[in-house]
Amino acid sequence: MDYNKITQELKRKKMLHQDLARQMGITRQGLTAALRNKSLRVKDLESISEILDVPISYWWEEYQVNENKISYQSQDMIIKRLNRQIDNYLDDIKRFKERILELEIQPVRKKEAS
Image (cartoon, rainbow, N blue to C red):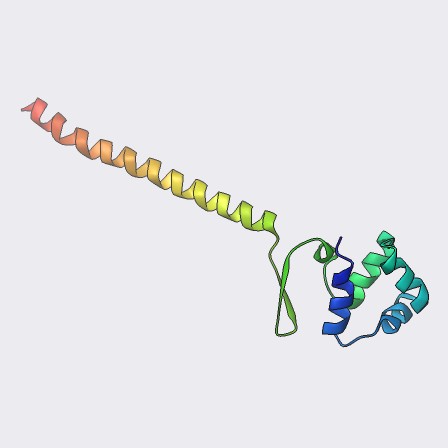
């Protein structure tokens, strides 16, 4: 997990650590210690994600920040989409090859019938 992203996201949203801590119901010192020691509990991370309006996976995934909006595409999603596209292309190639073979065989059958 990238704990620096929490501070980056706070800056982006123009919030202070104490603002986040107050909304979480903990002290600023408690939040600062948890960030420094890299010891956030899952429930705290869920709370931070909700307050900062990002999915919990944000802290582990690659995101792009554009015009104060987070645009997310996980690597797994991209890979799955590309694999589906490749599979579709391979299916198309197979169908084209089969059709070409059919077209090549048809004139031969016509000549044989004569």
